[in-house]
Image (tube, rainbow, N blue to C red):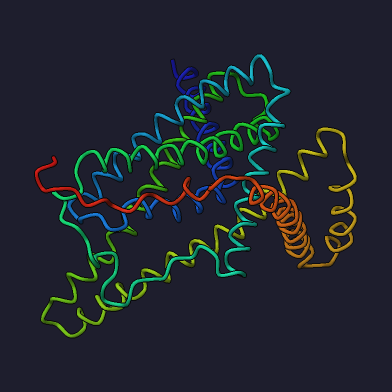
Length: 329
């Protein structure tokens, strides 16, 4: 009995360790997810924000459950397709990152932040005027976007498991590890989103207090929120280019084209030998090289996509709340 318990605890520890390791490799997608999702509750009455986020989070868990089943089948019967699938995710990350760079440089689709003190509440319709139909449409759009991001997270996680020290894990252990990653990522992303969308509500409440210190803190929170979201978006942009480029480099290397990744190794290996700081410098160079590859590939993809008769920004930008009569429930 004691031996069985020890073996069980060892399995649990392995799954927890693997989940933690794979989660860090999906960090770029997580930051992007956290930056994108608050758009879906912009302009919504405070009483509906958390319920809507909870609905999206539940949809995200369903997305990940479906993806785990599909990936487990592919991993068992067609493992050869996992690297190309991961590279598709790398292309998507590079494309998204490059688009954000182009928008930042060209001042493209960026929305102006509301004036300090107004926050997300400016011009807000009461909850009764939004209607259940609009809310359902909004949640559906967010869950569809989440499916793409969740697919990237789960493919990155599974590939990490197959390529790391945990590569010898059985099918059940892999599935449990991916389930742990799915729950962890969903809690982190939507917990952070819930906090973000409520920070300016907290700030507005503090601005009504009698204490001058609390009022100052409230004003600071309200004024800081647009900057926090901009910072998240910027971090997500850099992370997407880095991770996307790295996925493409390692993927092409696995598929037999060794030149690009080999060239990067030629640059980083001599630096790695520098005493004391070599490992850090080599990692920074590897990250920079990966980001440059991600930006170059992403820019080409963005150029191609923008020549097509599509309006791809509909994926990320939810429709503005349509005013409906108060009789519509």
